Image (cartoon, rainbow, N blue to C red; front, side, top):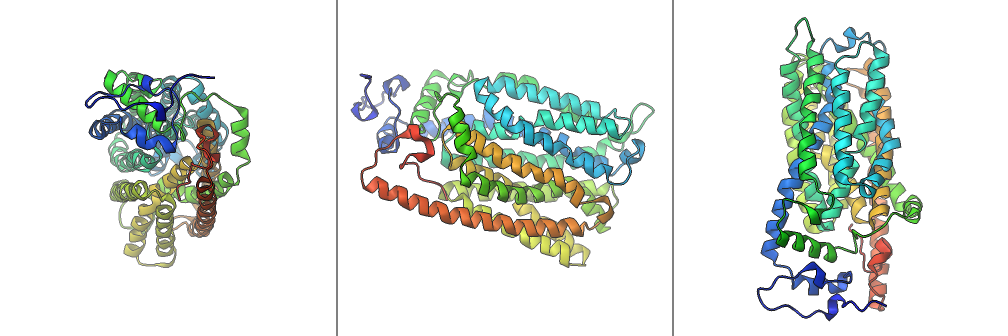
Length: 495
């Protein structure tokens, strides 16, 4: 039996003396949080969080920006001679758009598990190198078969980015800090959409004997992604407590924060197949997965086909449509940041997820039912309010209701895997033949959004019931057992 003192046995250090992580040997639960708080300088903690945000979230934002750019630039390429140059016919373009996402289904869970078993630094670096090389290579494809091969490889490498950024956030931050941190990376995706339109507008104007405009688009954006490799190797630590850009005092404070957060994430947790199976059998995961399929239908369809949708309005040339995506993406990023802050503050992510989905519903009604061009363009802006917030809020909510690491990793991966099936089907729903209004796809997205709303309401209702049972168990003296993860009676679900 260990003779190490627990948190409740510790004496408060003299005024002005900093707590060392070695002084807190035993993990602490929610009953001990108040005691641990006595050892944390709140001003120092806020300063630490700002520093973590600057280093980690700027890096993740840049990675996510280029990740989104290299995946969706095929939408901007389609406004050039791209399809004619490589001989695409029928719905081959739609197949090329969709083929990326089945690779996510296969590889996202694998990348996520490897992320903690091996070093996050090396896993993410390998992913970036792979997708950047493929993006450059896409600029030299000659036919449909080569394009499909490049898109499959792109998805294989990119599958290691989005879920692993989410998991790293859960390894460093507390549950009530997830949403706003994820909003920063999603704002980067919005910047990617806007920046991608501007960059595409410029690059596709270049045409010479060597490369055509769409080739310059793929090559330059791929080369820009390579710039992230040294930044990732330098900034991303193996574990946050060993970050070289943190002082020893800051590393100690990070360690204390991790002790306070041990009920949600334990750095010492080892891989267990039992946790994998526990995630697979959890009904909550499947309800959110179905909801995510509906949510991602809108995310992938709008981000991929937006230039074509705007072009179909007839208010600009095909090339200028790239520029008109910029304000739409700006609104998408800004609105998510506002919704994410409120979700973290209230600890009720489902409410803001429902708000986002409501904007989807209104946006689709405008795009489907309104004949006026201005009204349909306004519908895109309405859709944009929920564009990034809905998808990320659902994943963040999933991350807050599952613990420890490997169950959370598998749960969030499964949700995103099922959601990515939407990417595999949008090319067959938003077909070339249904352009420019894509009414078939719009109706499908509208209907599946209603399914997502029903799933979200059901899960919210059930978690309220589960929390009531946990509170009753606590009142009857149930012990705090962080090692049980989300089965711990003291682990209350965010709703």
